[in-house]
Amino acid sequence: MSGSDQGRGLDVLDVQDRARFEQLVLPHLDAAFNLARWLLRNRTDSEDVAQEALLRACRFFRGFHGGDARAWLLQIVRNTCYTWLEKNRPVELMSEFDEELHQQPSVSPETLAIAGDNRERLTRALETLPPRFREVLVLREFEGCSYKEIAYITAIPIGTVMSALARARQRLQCALTHSSPQEASREL
Amino acid sequence: MSCDSTRTVLHGYLDGELDATRAAEFERHLENCRDCAVALGAVESLRSSLQRSGLYENAPVSLRKKIRADLDAATASPAALRIPAWRWLALAVALLIVASVSWYAWPRVQNSASSAPFTAAELVDAHVRSLQPGHLTDVASTDQHTVKPWFDGKLAVVPPVKDFNAANTSLMFLSCLPRSRTHQFIPPACDRVINGATGVARGWSIARSRTSQIPICTSLPSSSISKSGSLFWQQSFRLCHRATRRLLNSHAMLEATSDLNYRPGLLFTYAFGIFLA
Image 1 (cartoon, rainbow over the protein chains, first blue to last red):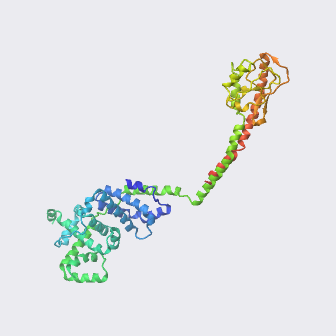
Image 2: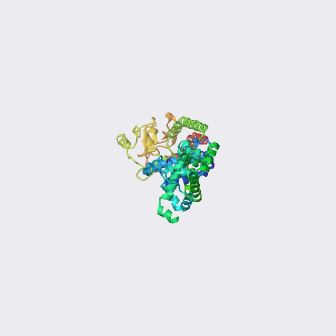
Image 3: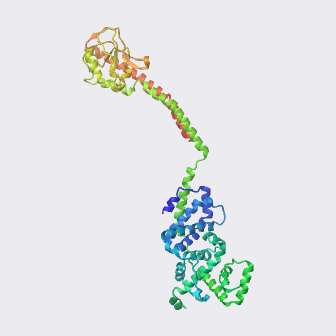
């Protein structure tokens, strides 16, 4: 891929930087791949994009002066993913983040629990969410990121992380319970 | 606290992101609001579903390998390329030394090569060629109008040709001289240049002259009696042959010394430069 070729020979690491990079950044490769996988919804593309993101991280590593290496890397991964999406699937980014949610009736925890136990349905529900909802959910529920970290990674103001999560969870509930009502009722 | 606002705040509460005051406020609201309690339960259930789902995807081994390879590519080369400043300085100094010594010594090497009369191999080649049948006597004439045009097409400089039978004749043993260098070896004092006698020859001897910086091989005028006949010529040619061999030895030595005077010095300089670099 062109990104990896550009990375070679440019702003390369010296031996100490390399050791630091391996110690600080590489342990978060799983997190990087997981975020890319859920943002791009495709393992092959995620592998390419995660590789490119790591190369970018490698190039920018001299600019990283300590702090939260995972958040730093995930921010790069997230930006690389969005660049990729803009280029390859611009339609996906059209969905409005601040889309007004119609007030939905409360879903009972039991209904949700049953629907959520179905792994495929959960995957599908998560994948139907717009990328900006998906990313806050992945960061919060899979990575256990704090609101501060989420704000840093996704470049949204820290004051709006909570409402973003609220909307994302609401959307996921909707997707889980309403995407296939007949299926849900059958299971119930 | 209204339910509308708590629908958002409950997420902060669930995620442990509320400060103590707001958390306590939310808990008070929760005690009295069943809807909010149900909503909180739903979100908790959703969260545990997500966490139990095993949807977290670890990086595949192939990706790790690729990234290792990328890192190797990004790290290995610069270690070799990054050269401290003093090394560049040393390299510059070494180049300067090599350049100056070469500039000083090269013309000498060149001069020594061109001032060496000819190489031993050239001399032998020319001599052997002159001994080939049909070359022994290239021009069977003593007439300068015949001899001179013959030289004309073959030599860079046509030597003066005089009557062979005149007194005080000097002979030059031209056959030993490589053609390309002949112009260097025509001594001003040489009256006659022959390759193979045209009938009369005198006692041959070959000497190296350093007059006018041109080593020459020439036959010196001999006081011995002129004699006609090819037999005598053949004898004198043998003499000449031996003399040539002596000459070759001395030239070989001359060349060797002239070149070796400078080559080891140059070699040393280059080696020193490489060492510094």
